[in-house]
Length: 285
Image (cartoon, rainbow, N blue to C red):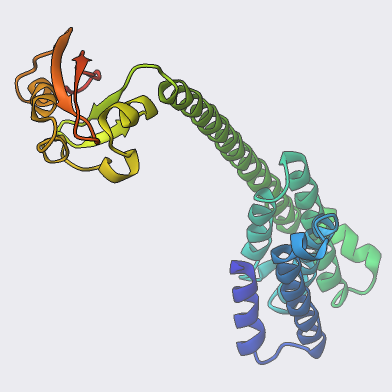
């Protein structure tokens, strides 16, 4: 998109551009719009198989219009040679390292052709033009060689960085999936325990309630999660709230304690309670 905006500015405000550059830019604009729409709606309209082809056509169109701009604005001395680099960097975000290097080769070929075409206009023959380009005695040869080396260096660096970024994204996605599976398995085990299990945070708010706890205490997790346990249990089982708060207020754990609570039907039932404090490596609740 950055290349597209720069090209739009050049074509719109560089008044002495020839007409064929404007035609190329119009075709490039249509292709860009079509590719964006195709990529956006590829899954809906069944074009996901041809998206790689559309992307390749997009890059070829970029190289064509960039070559025209460079040829018209000074050839080897054009201030817009950086457009080729933008295309190579963009390719690294789409292709693997090999594909990026292939595109860099295409850019290098287009650049060499532009230089040859620009010089051949003022030279007496094509042979004289080739002698000028490939003569190691002149600065033109080293200038062309340096630009081509820069193209390949940018392709290699951007391709490697993109590869590492994709690798890190894949590792992160795998770790996230593994963590999600572990949480689902752990949650499934805890929810099906025969004993009631509830957890509060360092502020005394309820953060977990398994199904057995719901059945024994008569509260639904969706109704009490996030609420202070002192508020939830104050009416029917204040002693339960005090035992839970002992852990966060005084650091006390109850290996085993028995008392009576009032269930949802208004009946007094005996319960046994064991509490423990969960600590991490950096802080304690």
